[in-house]
Length: 386
Image (cartoon, rainbow, N blue to C red; front, top):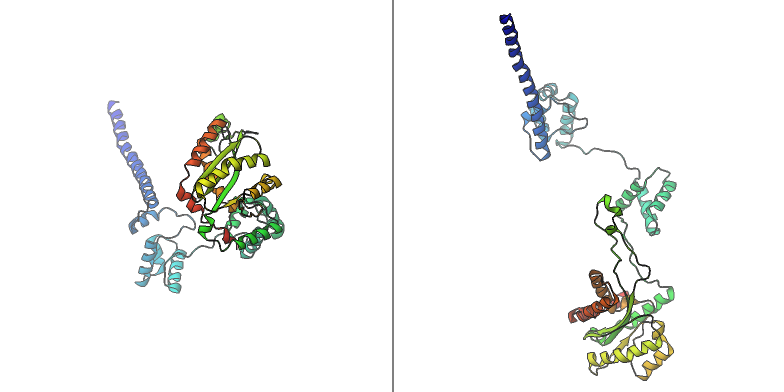
């Protein structure tokens, strides 16, 4: 009994190493294939023997043959080896070897011919029609363009397809710039004004005292449009875009020239002709004397109602102040608008919480405008309108 038991145990111990060896060989092949696939991902070039080993594994349908293997097929073909022997030695199909050799005969190259792929839904003619429609109706939404394209081309088209087609037309969706509306009469007057001042030199423009009003609001609570958060933080109060219906604001009047910054006046509420005349007496006249020191200058203001009121024009006439005629709806022609834009950008960074803080920040940023910046703004591009 003991001998029989020992014999069974002995035979069992002899069979276990065989199963273990088979398992090791299978795992080794699996690891070798994994290592080779990783080497292919990082750009490792396989040798011919490795490709012969990998040819045992069935390649995916439509997979391109590597250039090294193609070169080996052509070399054996030039030595007089038959196509059947080449396919058998490299473990490839006869049709694959035949196609590579035939392409080599016709073109003399072994490069892979670019596949045709799936044809696009919209051809070149459709893209030209789509481009004409997009240019004609520039303010149309993508959904509206998709609805028109489905009716016009009689094809099933999605919004993503139209997005890709618009990019293929070398067009792109942008956020439109904001410009004041001008009718034909205003455009004509603007053109005549630019033509009349076409021969003005830079020295002539430096004699202009630019003035304008602007409104500044307390931006506390008005957070930005974009927020950095995770998908789950959408209901976090710190990620909300808060909006204030009637924020506290200040009306600011200022003047400037190429010589430097003039006075700055801040008041609450609206402005009328009487209050505007007081601003001119208390701030414009001292700034004029300080910046130009008795030299002749031209005063500029826009066509707001307090500026064009009869009492304002009569006050300017009595003071013998030469006023620059200004076309309607043309804030982009005045360089002081760039000053307001610079200051408002600084205010968004500071985020004043009270009106007092807002006023102090405005005065500080107004005094910090450098003179080289003013000289740069005094090189007007007004006459480019022609």
